[in-house]
Amino acid sequence: MTSGWWKVGLAGLALLPSGGGAVGRSSGMLAGDGSYVIKVHGELSSFEKKAPEVVSLEAGERQNAFMQHTMTGKNGARFECFVPRPGYEPPRAPAEGGASGDGDGAAAALSADAASNALQPLSGQCAQLSAGFWWYEVCPFAKANQYHMEGKTRSTVIKLGAYAAGEDSLELAHTGEGGVQMRGAGEGEGGGGGGSDGGGAGTKQVLVQKFGGGEGERTLLARWSCGSENKLLRVVEAPAHTYTSYLDSPLLCSPAHVSALLVPLRSSCVRKAEGWWTHEVCFGARVRQYHKSKEGAEEQEHVIGKFNEPASAKLEASGDALVEETLLSSGAADADTVTAFVQVYSGGDVCDLTGEPRVAKVMHHCASGHAPYISGVREVRSCEYEITVAVPSLCAHPKMQPSGGKLGGDDGDDGDSQSIHCLAQAEWAKRTASAAGGDA
Image (cartoon, rainbow, N blue to C red):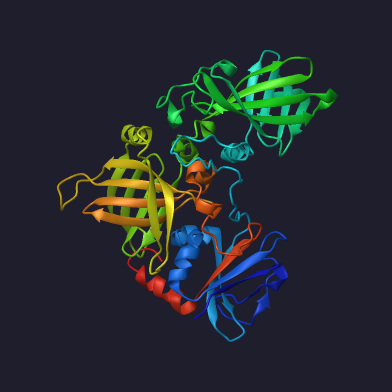
């Protein structure tokens, strides 16, 4: 069997529902007016490597993210296809310009594009600050406002400016800027960085965002620094109608500390069902494995480890948290070598074979995609695991960029298109059968 891909518009999709019937055009099935890339996989090994956003999900989660349909080719061959549901975000490559190129192992400063990309998880959110009569609101990548509160109602709203896309810049500032002294290395949440972001002792790196075109020619500068929490610290008006706001975020902690980019994921988990076991990584919390019955009930659970923050921080501080890891897809001969960031999960359930608690190293790496997923699980010794997790947000860090800037996507893929992955029915049946003891 052969594999291939085609870029089509909505009118170019011919889908046959799984229940049978004549081939018809899909009109209301897909959202938006964008183009779609149909990727046909003749073999299961190709599907598992090229469609991680599909295979990494359990059956219930997969149904929430994708519609499964049967597509027939001109030769009558039938494929199981996974169509993104409305609201699904296609994979996006990170902002360019993050590579340091120094190659000496020293911490490299983020470029303005990479720093902005690191701040993207805050898009759609706003930070507010009460300063007497006035309240201030800064919404990164959107707008800035000033307003007065009458009870629970906003009044006298003044627009301070709209975000000026493409004008972000980086500056060096004293560590006391904004009224909060920077934490030393290893202190606070997110491994807050010391004052050594390329500017010497007593300095820190600041991301500056511009907001212009406000009422009465008002403008605002948002000066973002590393901090233990996302917070608007203060706003200064000087001269009149010219505002400067000072904000903190763990997403902008020293680029030597990749862990800051993992902080926003701490309320989420990723899972991978493979054969008998389903493995689950809950960021900053725990790792476990369990068997899922045909009825969907979880059984035979083993806690592999709980997040060991002191051990992980020590590993990071020593520089040993960044390692080269080889990613080999199931059944494939080709492999990719990536830079992985290691965190330790220890103190799991006692292993029957060794009498010792289970333990795992979770190895996070950059990859294209719309969300994190488990890319591999290995039991290197009895009850000792290495679990690789793909985290797209890590691509904002210069040390996590793949060599050559390639993120492991298919050649010729278009970042503005959504992918519809199709696997030959016989191959999909093999995968379903192999996971019959757990989750299909």
